[in-house]
Length: 280
Image 1: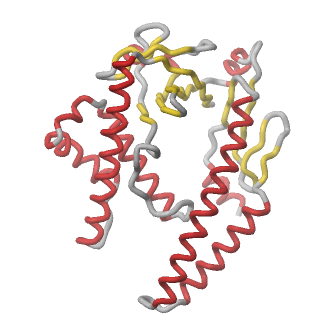
Image 2: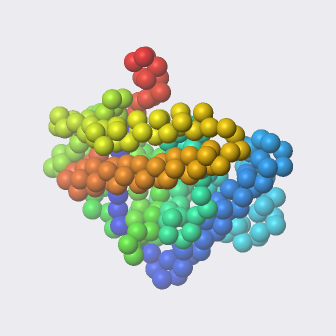
């Protein structure tokens, strides 16, 4: 079982400058990689994969020596983010990936934590070429169980999100004196909590998704290359964006409410795709 713990970071002025510079380089790589995929598809009629771009990364770093300052795992995660964005687009969960500005690329992720290296100094997290950054931890955690480190800049402050693997016994022990909640991912609902609270898909979202399907069917009947088809594509894209923003806002309100009222949050690790197949 995985839990996420969220703490405030207190970087020095020099460390903050390095963090901002790392975000800049990651955003630059993201946009370059997106442009690379677009050009490759136009020229060859097929897209690049994550593996393709990962293999190109060493050459890119040679041409841009400033990237030697960034941990290789952080750069690989940039490519994974872009790959996830494409998968979400092809599976109908999001619009086509967009180029990022500084307001929409605000975090870095170290997907494979090494406790002896990243938490060698108590009360601090170590990031290559940035140094030991002070963590304002309001509860204890086991560095040896940390799987992923995410550092995010939000509203003028820096935060660290730690994905920590624990068993059920540890979860019960950790929750002593603190409020803990378990969350199960749903198929017909967004989530269900251990306190019996069910977060259902709102009716407006269900209606919007039905309308999206209807517009998609209408688009498929339009003649390719026609003005009517282009108008329909714009209409569909506009609705996709509207629904995505509404969904994002709704999920943010749910997550904010859960985080605000609980000290420890446990999310069940389920293979949702397999569940959906069995459900059918």
